[in-house]
Image 1 (cartoon, rainbow, N blue to C red):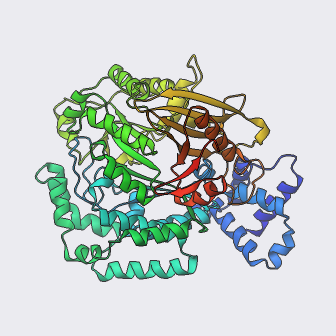
Image 2: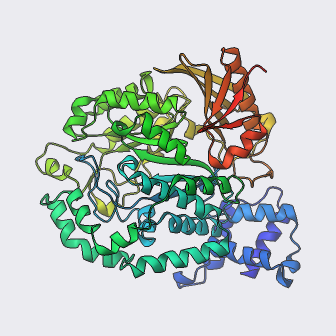
Image 3: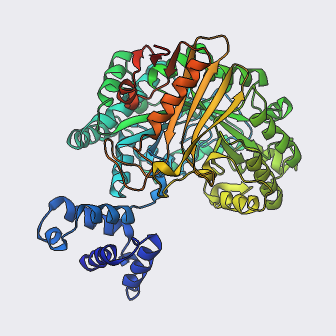
Length: 593
């Protein structure tokens, strides 16, 4: 391992341009060339671990390399595993709530009784949740350890809470769950190690197990009943989680707002700060009360399963949601300042490729909707879903690959510049998919098709600077205005001459209100540590504060007397420096004074 580090150091010092990932991959292949046992092959993660250990110990080996600060920065950047994971400016940690009865009964939803409704045990985040007894603290610490071992900076964390329908859970569980997320970010490594050991021991003392093979065996017969339609998902969940073991465990899974608020206060200056918190729920469960609760918890973004805006299709899928409820949910969330992430599905029961295009066009074109972010999925069939019966009867069929690509490419092309399409596939293994798309590179296939489009693709993800180098002088400020049912929205973006986006701000000017709202500020580029500047990246170049000042000027010019920001817990201190004061669930700045 020493020799490969020496080769890397030599390349960093001698190259006209720093070595890149392709160069490193070639070097690793050369070292593995004569090693016949694949299990003994040198891997990038092992090189990074060896380098970091030498760096931390600062012993004779480190001294012999004589690595300077700039060389160290380049080497760590080169050795980072999966650099795209923090290319959007933050490190993301996804956690799952425990399985719970669902208020919906959608035909396409998986009914895996080991997981919250709509999720499957083989999905990566689900596996991590199950290994950790669905405990939020244990899940966060496991993910932090992996990110850091792969060379990622974890000062700024976006927390994503999955689990079907957040609003179906008891409020005391919601408060406990979020409190533990913050606690996991707040605790130092020594304390976290102690808590993790205590938690795992407690769950096992209750009689719970976390081994996937054992759980699969124990639930096999019950799962067969659900898959055959003899039992509903909710009935099976009620049996499983009424056990004495889970009753004992759940007795400790409760908290009050005072405990949550204390953990939030600590997180304002913690090493791992929560700069975003997202939960997912159903639009029919969104109202002023639920929005205020989510805001009190510290949420800044809400995912909603829309799936379709056609009432007949929603009914055919067993969705039991009215389009009017979706309209209300968009308005409520927007007025409360949340960033809105909508889930949309193509190839649902009763739809056609052309109808899907029209439906998506309505989502991104009708003022009653207009989400900020979209997860655009093709419907696929898994064995436990009720959709299987319609598939067997020939009522539903998956689109051909060409039909699917045509729909998705048209949807991408129709997406406005202020919307980000974050995903196009679920992390469902091909072995779990009975019918439908199994291609994991679906997005790349869609991108290839859109390359021939007459006009450039405008949606955010395709324009992100990501890991590219830039300086503040490379960008200019652009503003896109659009109108919703309850507000005028302004999307302020830093873009390059080629249209790439380095950062943006979402300014909301609500109708009939004297207070404007900043719903999101995001700067792209490689994550830089808090209070530092990473050469070449967009982080910490003053782009965010310039966006905020522009938003304040525009809101004042439009006649608003104050402006709120839906700040995350970890960014409260940042906004205080920009003249905002704490004001209930938001931070406020008076304008025109």
